[in-house]
Image (tube, rainbow, N blue to C red; front, side, top):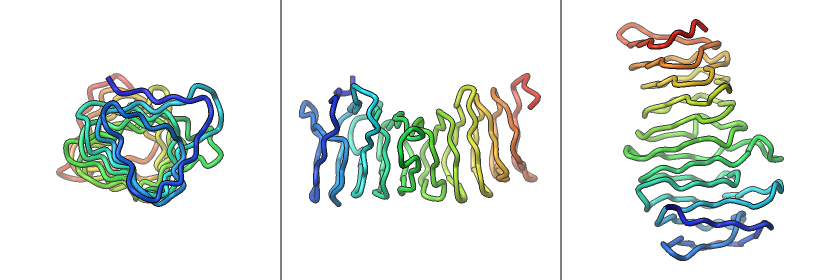
Length: 219
């Protein structure tokens, strides 16, 4: 089970070095205004006990380098600091859309065997998402700039839309639930598996690409 880190008041840490979150050693703090780094060496759960408009303002690097299961980050992440997922699953499910910033424009690198569950919503700079792992869109999200992720993209946003504002190229796409929306267009260069949800935006399936439809949806 992930270690739980909870606090009713936001803490500020001026971290300019390297903070390593080790198994059994919780570290309190939701904002990282310094230029240091956080290494998650085990699976953790970062959350808040109240509804304050707080955020983890990452100005350094956040690295998930340990823990083969899921780390849950229930405090919205903002800032331009890099996020690197080397293994396991990083679940970002804080409410970014309800935060005053409302946008994440940080470089996000997802390694081949790693997963990012993006559930914090708001606006995501799609051009900053790189790697060969799995990118899951779990909530209503607006993807700005050009999203060209080379790994597996999955839309599983329930009844909510994932909106692509700019031309998008996706290697492999699974549409499980939710709505693929936006002017895009979204071009799938490999295989798209459509098992749930709908499409209201522009979708392009070029020659030699595959669209496998296994749903009764007609939108």
